[in-house]
Amino acid sequence: MERSKMSLLSEGKLVVKPKYKHGFSSSQIDSLTVVCEALIPSVPINGNPHSHNYYLSSASLPPFPHETAELMVKRGIPKAVVAVSLVLKLLSTRLGTLFLCGGASLDWRWPFIHKFSELSIDKREGILQKWSRGTLSSL
Image (cartoon, rainbow, N blue to C red; front, side, top):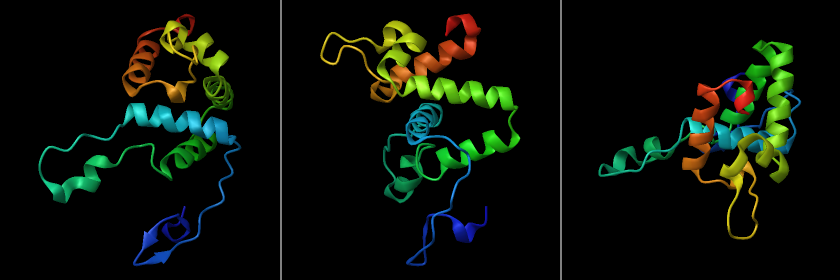
C-alpha cells in the first residue's frame, strides 16, 4: 500500500484510511488484534521518557492487524487462510474459545467463560505457546 493511503497523522494532516479487501469480519479482526498483541506486546517503561512511544507500541495498533490479514490472504495458502479464518471466528465467541483453549478460558466469576480477547495477556501468550508446541490435536 502507498504510504499516502495509510491512516496516519502526518505533518498535522489526516491521511485517508485504506479500503482493505481481506474479507475478514470485524470480530475476526478483533481476534487477530489480540493474537498480534500477545505475539508482540508493548513493553513497560523504566526510565527514559523520550522512548515512551516506542516502548508502548505493539502489534495490536492499527494498521498492523489489517495489514497482516491482507498479507495472509494475498500470500497465504488458500486452505490455511480458511483455517485461520475459522479459528479467528471461533476465538471471537465464548464457546469457540472454550473449545479451542479449554480450561484457560474458564473463571470462577461471572462470566464463567471468557472470549479470547477477554483473557489476560499472560493467558493468551501461554495458549499460543502451547499451540506452537503441539499438533492440531492440542487445539
